[in-house]
Length: 463
Ligand SMILES: [Zn+2]
Image 1 (cartoon, rainbow, N blue to C red):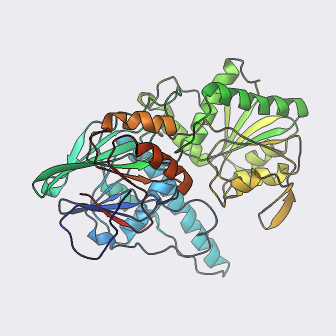
Image 2: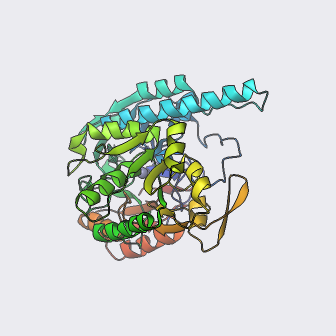
Image 3: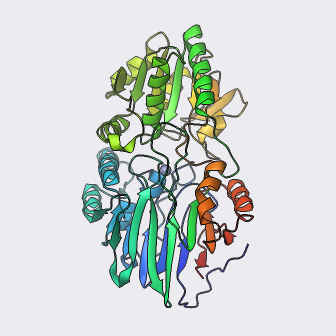
């Protein structure tokens, strides 16, 4: 493996600098300098762990005004969370993304701006510390105005003859991989960025489109070296947890991100209950934003390979009173709530009520990043610290891995097989170090060219 780190010398070669998701899974943000343009691939927040929550946000490590365009793969926070701040700080170019993603992004940005404005005004009213929103409603609206839709299979042109195309990534609704083509030094060149690549073999989204042929591949590696549970194993593990809850009279708490994970979990629970694979049990969803996303899912049948089951017999909770009622009423039930890694979100209120109840089950359906409360919950300890105190952890904790919207090791090998002998450089991002290394080891034997796992802040020349 070789790479060339930034030397400060000017170069006529295209290059890419990694400002996030380098040897980690969050904060996706990569600056491609090619064909005379500066194109930012995603603009995500570091969204997991507590490490950044008490610090003011870092300024961008580049001048936002110097960026010519953004390509946004999808609206998970770790890919879009800093986008409105980029606009607030002076970016005013086009944001290329899929039209459905613009709709989802609108829900997310407006909700986030409203919450930040409320927090600032509450603190001001109470004489508390000055809270400065990272962005406000005006920034959110300006960001949405800059979005330029590209359908899957279509292209848009930037100046200097650069073309940006999108293909269906199959990760969440409206998710895309990006293909950027340009001419430089009398050569046609292109780069494919997978964004988050979906998994195959699950009847929900159609499988990801074929990776566009390219010279340079920027590939996520979240599940390098890992294989997901099959749908049958997912159903069996979920059924065991629900049967236990019914038998004991306990609750099943499922933390899930509002966009994507909530909807797929609801769909499969409904499907398995109808098919008699898991016992019927009331499902409550405590995620008003997840409800709004679900409505977009429901009116976008073209984004799914099966009819969606996300509204029949589901209690989408809208008020705090309703949520507490669902949590505290006696009897078994399933409560899905926002906060996929237990780092904030509505799940924490439910966890406070049930963490010391051995009849209940915490069913984890997402990757739990190192340092998160979700990762702590998976440890054997019989106590856990959150919300300012230590609690007895007598709730059963189970994990079902297959709900992931990410490719696993086998999916990566299949997706990249047609590129063997064609790409000259592959850069692995968006994976913990060990997983990225496992994928790099597999790729290095397959004729995909030079394999690099970039460090944070590193510039790789595209030669
Ligand atoms: Zn994602």
